[in-house]
Amino acid sequence: MEQDLLSNIEKQINHTLHSSRFWSSGYSIRNNRLNGLYLRSENSENRKIKKIPDIIVEAIYLETISFGINLIETIPENFGQLQRLRYCFLGNNLIEYIPQSMSEMSNLEVLEIQNNRLNSFLDDCSNLISLRDLSLGNNLLTNLPPSIGQLENLVSLRIPYNTINELPSEISNLKNLSRLRYGSNMVEKLPEWIGDLKNLNELMLHDNKLKSLPESITQLKQLQILDLRNNNLSEIPIWLFSELDSLKEIYLSGNPLSTSFKQKFKTITKLMPENILIDGYDISSYFRKSNLF
Picture 1 (cartoon, rainbow, N blue to C red):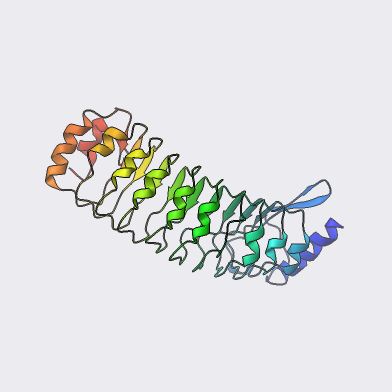
Picture 2: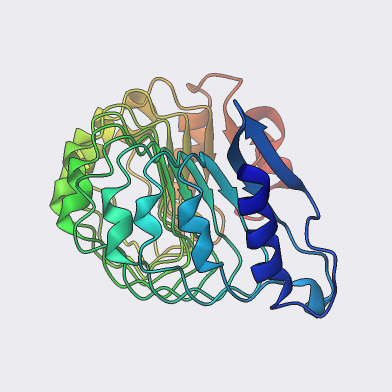
């Protein structure tokens, strides 16, 4: 039965190709059920699939789908019928739209759909209760739905290279969030509620338009990596370095830092832990090698 289903899926995919060989990575069977489909296309354009076969929704025991780096433009409207799906990798395609049926995939843990052409996410994603890792970077997004604040198991939110210049305040409810990648989004100001994300250990804010940082950022006591490169910061608040006890890496290059701050910063670094990295350099060699000083 599963072999017949697999054969039909393969035929539908091969129908979109100019070659007879489909599986570059393969599939997995567990307990005589089709459990995973893996296709990362070869470099040749005629080896890239353009469509996810509609018949795939009959593979109801699928837990993993990996169809990244292809030319897929659409996801089947009833894709959400794959209720056992846990890992969905669709990055590096041409997808413009996520069908609302995917909002019912309550077992989904990882959704990677970066490097596509999405201009919106699901209107209501509150039923994705198992989601831990959401990757939406390098799309055409301008906002995120408030319902994202109900994904209480979300650990990693990666949304760089969009134009989401303001995040919904409901994100402050994501108490388990440890990674927020929010670089290159035309952000001019961080909200005060950023300090509510107490478990953040990685905050990436590079290539935005920040002129200042909210004082609430000092509440991020677990923060280990802070990337502020290529913003409009003339000063980095002194309290940042004294309050963030767990900080191990900070990136500052590409900011118009003032002369007065640079002078103060040299003094501050003498009081910082020696193992902290600044723009990738340890403190002892930072001032010799950095372009900032």
